[in-house]
Length: 170
Image (cartoon, rainbow, N blue to C red; front, side, top):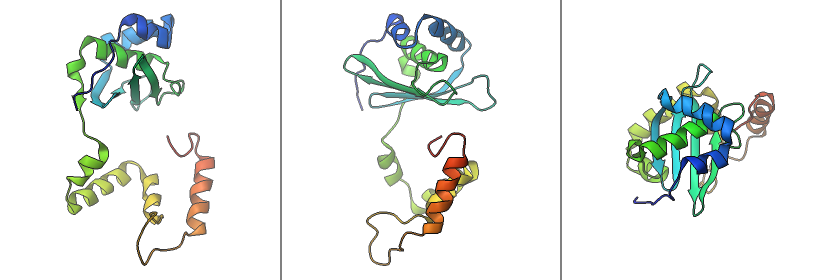
């Protein structure tokens, strides 16, 4: 994965997030709030310590002209123009080698044994209990013996999605 990123400057970041947000992002950057920084293809991912108890999940994807899209899990980060994304981008400009290169998810999963995958799914459902509902869903393309869709399962998932303040894809 030897992907080349377009050159990125403080001016580019300022154009993306705005002057005031860049200044706030500088504070997060200078205090080392960005961690678990990694890159896959043209996308940077990381976590950021913010004002909430849980960290924010960040990502920014580059295109030929620079920053193409970004996202943060903070309350204002849906468009990726928040101080946390600014801190992520500043971290990239300051030290791109601090971003660990990661494999495509499918490739990484194919390398795992069945026992490792089971343990991983168990850990994921412990951390995010709502994921367990996915185990009740049939997978498309399943061969003979495929269970028909269970309307009750779909109904419960839809009800949960509408009750959840952040919907399905938190």
